[in-house]
Amino acid sequence: MNSGEMHQLSAVLAQHIACVKYDTLPPATVAATKRAILDGLGVMLAASGLSEEILPFVELARRHGGDPQASMLGFAQRVNLPMAAFANGAMAHALDFEDAFDPAPTHPNASLLPAALAVAEARGPIGGSEFIVAVAAGCDLVCRLALSLRQPLEAGGWYPPPILGAFGATAAASRLLRLSAVQTTDAFSLLLCQNTCPGEIKNSAETVIRAVREAFPAQAAVISALLAERGVTGFAHPLEGKNGFFALYAAGKYEPRDLLQGLGERYWIEHLSFKKWPCCRGTHAYIEAAQTLLQARNFALDEIEAITIVGGPLQRMLCVPELQKRSPKTLIDAKFSLPFCVATALAHSEVTLGSFTAATLRDRRLLSLAAKAVFEPAQADAAPHAAAGTLRIACRDGRAVEHSVARALGDPQRPLDHASLCAKFVDCAARAAIPVGPEAARQVIDRIMNLESQHDVGALLRSYPQ
Image (tube, rainbow, N blue to C red; front, side, top):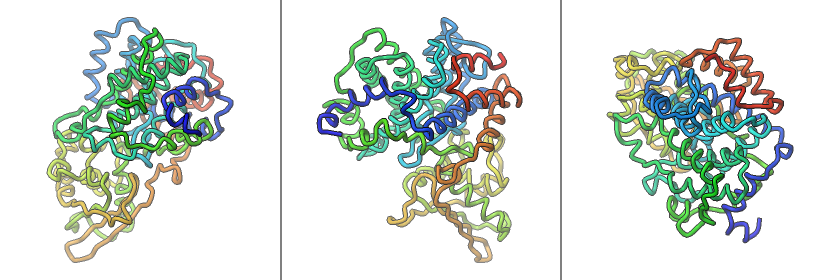
């Protein structure tokens, strides 16, 4: 890495995306990418049958979908390429069950996979090895962007995950369309003209935009790559330019070395966390702590006087405003509520896709427990990362129990094993709008685990029962 590279970030990154070869990927990167593809596909299928919030997006795609180029996952209809990315993007985060990158909290594949799958089906045949390269490179870019920031996007009033994820989606779409490095830079420029997500997404109790937010970056990524393919010229420096991404979103405060160091040698997709529980990754340590305390049987639920959630800034965000988080009005807000998720884990011992329904939002037992939850800041030198935390329960008779989780299950150091990930996929596929049976789901698993041998990734999508 030299000073010239640091001042040509967009060009260097675009060159890497356009030119990286499958046979240069470390075996661990290939394996991790297959896991991400399997997990993301399953989560989208489940959302097609479980999430009411996605239905306006699906209906809009149906009415204005044009040529039948790519599948809306879980539905018996194909629409044009941008609308397929749009509809599937709405599904990607609707259940908050997709993978996460804990070191710089974001969801690198939430808009990437909907965009990449739509391109692979519409513009195929695209082989499995090429698809793996596109996903690995795109995911890696999102993680590098997130790690490079020295001023959080929230400081400017932005909501980071879809903004950062859009660049990975654009990278993957550009790679699958076989764009040159210059065209890939053009695609980043065109994305910059569309890419936004305000922090206000967190502040309104009634909105469901937080659930379906990935529809917008997935579609924008595809449109950006398609326009670049058609010769629309962008900016020379969409990322590092005077008024480029870092200037606009982070006041120019970033570290170029985090973007370039080890580029093409190591891939951050190896460091993703896969979720056991369908809610914000920041709740997982506390769900696990609640389950551990329950197993010890030191208290009964009716003995609980107070529940203390000890954590850092991210965990605080999941606890305030207190009234809203103790009694969430929407399913997505419940998934972003530590009081509600902890109450669910205590009351039912497990948190599942069935834990978040209109009925559970009105469950008096859950709401009573959630009302006892308070947030306590962790000591400055012990502030936890996204998947860590301490749960303390005080009983009426003065007894108190406490448990800390340093890294919640699903972390790369405590990964979901292959059997668990496959079981998650089978369960998710069975919940699709058009359900996929266990045997068919296992066949999909086998094909994804051997994706490099597949001639046409799009055929994998078209093989679902329709």
